[in-house]
Image 1 (cartoon, rainbow, N blue to C red):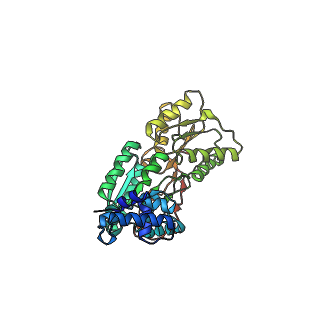
Image 2 (image 1 turned 90 degrees about the vertical axis):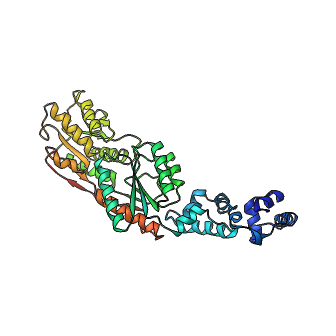
Length: 386
């Protein structure tokens, strides 16, 4: 049977152009229409005999080209993603109508039925911070008759790819993503997903998915300012990896700005990079103290590093907070079981998870979001370590 592709080849045009001719689009010039009509006549092409599979010869790429957008944007329109503006949706919808495009079987499945599965990708299952978020997601998902597919990536891109492929195979209705970092490779990976996505605990400018977070910069600023107001002048900082633009970079910037605003000079010898583990906090403060530099306070960019630092400080014979005060960030359950109890920035981890799943369920239902970037409140819990 003669297909649209055969007609396009004979006429020397694209399949999208043939479809426009068949659908009497005004975008086709008389000369092009004449070529296509001639090819149809020569090949004996009969539109009424076209099977549904032949209608699908118009591809998502054709639609993207017609609308002047990316294929990923067309996919998001098909799946009612909140990421797409009204004007873009209008362009894509018009292109779909003009080309008589029929989404592939998988896209139709995603639009007409639910699997009641939610994907949840986290970078570190050992970190209690993520455990609190997972609990929030699972509790609310269960109340809405959804099951959660939890996948741990250890922050490795190769594992993230495998996890995303698993979720595609399972045809999840949506994804909550928490990556160790966010770069162009992650952007490309997520853009090829045909389901709604919400990102928790990342606030990079490059992210154009709905996000749920706190203001990491301001929280770190406030904690540093609190330490200064308490009389600490020589404040060390154990930060996160440079590639982490949220918990790493923004918390460091908050710390440095608070020093500057209080006319305290930033000292490179008082700052080290960690990786948010107990061991890196232990090694970080060791690196500072081995230079014969004794800060009067240490602010770690997460609680695990703060607890690791506390261990080394005590091993060296220093008292907390009499000799060196210590503050952390997150308020994980571990801080209730260390002595002295840790002063820390309180992240609403359970609420982060609950707000993330609430946002995702709205997207799945095709509802408009009031805010694509939700910022929750934080607090500073002052305890015995300062």
